[in-house]
Amino acid sequence: MKKIAWITDSSSGLSKEFAAKNNVFVLPLNVIIDGKTYREDVDITKDEFYQLLQSHGNNAKTSQPAFGDFVSLYEKLKEEYDAGIAIHASSQLTGTYSSSVSASEMADFPVEVIDSKIGDYALGKMIQNGIDMVNEGKEYDQVVSKLRTLPELAQMYLMPQNFEQLRKSGRVSTAQSIFASLLNIHLILGFDDGKVVVKDKVRIKKRAKQKMFQILDDAMEKYHLKELCIQHAGVKEHAMQWKEEIERKHQSLKVKIQTLVPVAGVHTGHGTLCISWLRD
Image (tube, rainbow, N blue to C red; front, side, top):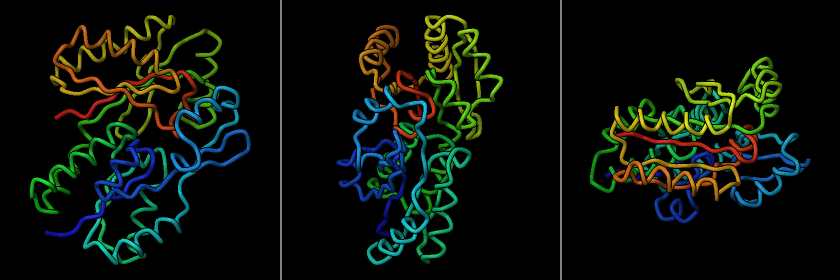
């Protein structure tokens, strides 16, 4: 059996402990806040980041890892591993996928690079599923083939809190941003083939939450989800409230809570809440 290295970027939200235990090599993305650049989960924790974002969120930016970092990693990995499997955040949102492809070719290290078409929990879950398959004894090609089907089974819905940042990042149009801000409209965003799109607009925040819960109800009825993740941008207490409400209604559903990865929080703002899943 091949010795496989797993490669991803910090938008996967995987813990350092999990990565170290499972041969997962994580290239950190960068967040620039108050004029200073931090490597995600290296120079700053998620909690520290969201404390800063509350005060300096309107000028925050992100950047992907340097291409040379990818090349250096793959040059190093080919000395110890037979092959790699890389899963990255949506290629519609960041260049890490294309950098990973080019770097593996330059380093002459055989890597199957997969576009997750999403990020955060669902991306991390894809890697966990792949590792489980390898541990079960499945062959490299079989694992890769299965992993390439998973992006179509993932979804994430977000209630963003900073429309100006969304506009700057190009995640929503100027017209949508102004419309939402002036009329106190609450947007619900989701993913469509790797792109972030506006799924709905509601006038009252309470109704936005109800809409999110209705989306989950519909997914439960259609897909019989087993696990859900609630992600929050610095508002864990609100995520805990959502978890309690959801568990009361869907008692068979395993509900996890994670802090939203900072590169996503930069664009959506402190206080953002999300739900995400990777269905079977």
